Image 1: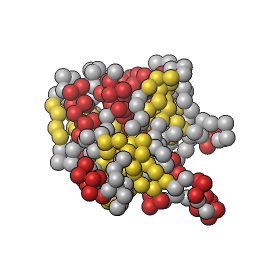
Image 2 (image 1 turned 60 degrees about the horizontal axis):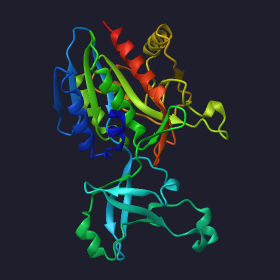
Image 3 (image 1 turned 135 degrees about the vertical axis):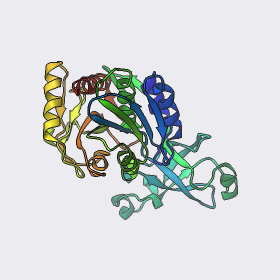
Image 4 (image 1 turned 120 degrees about the vertical axis):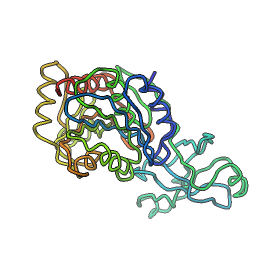
Length: 333
């Protein structure tokens, strides 16, 4: 299954090669041409006569990078993207292209002082245990600067739900791949961008090259529909369709585009919701702020527990996001 392959692939910021390979294999039969730019973005063109539209989905996931070796053979590491320090202890990870298994270790609670128990963890409080007995042994297996990802595998569970890693943003990649199999009148550029999680770096380059009239960003977005979170703070809810954003910390989304997308959703009987939070940001900031700018909108799949070792989403929401994007693109003539 394509979505499973995408989520299980390793592709933290700056190391998106495995994901890029899957995407190219999937889309090459459906587009006019494909280019890989100097920093690794995929820019796929599906030629048309209508407005120039850029649909964006970033390939990278949050992860870590090896920054050093301790004398006992454990690894020092830092984050690639926004990962809450509190969620990292005891997680199983894969390191580099060899998928060397490691466990993120921290001093057990029994040995922590009262002060240590009450403070937030830092990366300096943790290490990665790969089963090595010395610095030399670890350096023979792993290079400084190798990437690290969570080991979580994609799996279906419950009533139409899925769990796995990298839902931000393999959800968007999947939806965009599927949309490219359709025919549109607009002049469509599908950009699968790198390094979104460390500052939308790929999207600035892609947008500068494409210079779109319209930009649509596909994302896996925050969701906290939990018993202890008031509904107005949960941002989105699982099972209630794609989320159409109002604004976030880097962008105010085009009101006319949002209205058009909502009207199409109503016409096509596609369930949708408005994203009720302005936290976070995405590639839209780069698209509407590069060159002459562009009108922008974001359509997202709600994902619980985002930017952690495991997220949860609804397959129905994924398919509804795909249907809404395709219907909107077909309306652009």
